[in-house]
Image 1 (cartoon, helix red, strand yellow):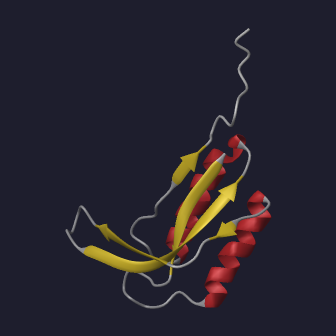
Image 2 (cartoon, rainbow, N blue to C red):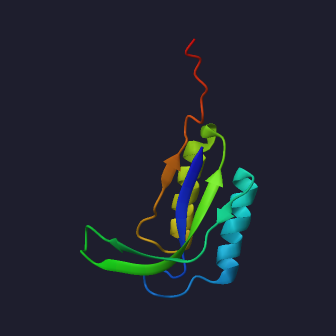
Length: 106
């Protein structure tokens, strides 16, 4: 399976996420899941449905491929990243959970 999240460059209060913090997340992602791909800087926004406040940020997409048995570990890791970086919410997308299949139609 492949999961994607976004690593913000600042906390919800506007304070910066340090390069050291970002590198620690990348190192831990590699250790837990065997690797990662970090994409280039992207702009994004998120509307907090509870407060109505819109948060704007620059983020780096973090893409990880791992075995489907690690779905819950991936989910928990993204939540941990959010807690480390003082986020109110984290994006978490899972693709290819069942992987590619070759179906014999003959």
